[in-house]
Image 1 (cartoon, rainbow, N blue to C red):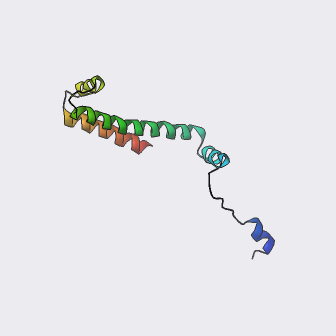
Image 2: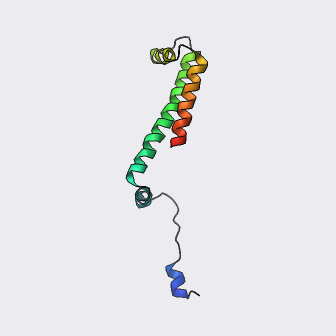
Image 3: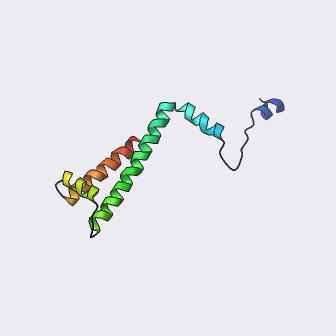
Amino acid sequence: MLDEGEDEINEEYRNQGKISKETFLIYIRACRYWAFMMLIIFTFFMQASRSLIDFWLRSEISDYPNQIFITIDGWFNDNFSETFSYLIIFNVVVTFIR
């Protein structure tokens, strides 16, 4: 059974407001720096692939397609379904890895 002295020592405190830098550093150290960097890199690629799909779709439906997206279409024989499928698969894989 705990006495009052031990109860005060084990009491947790909760702060409200911003998360301190120390808390972030504790989480980063707990998951190792290389794992944290991989998380950042794959999060970037996940968002980049989503944005790529959005811009590619906009280019596909516009009257003046962007040259970069014409090149991407060329990689997939100008097939809308095939290009869209591969872009979605890439996004799903990156999201899964993340």
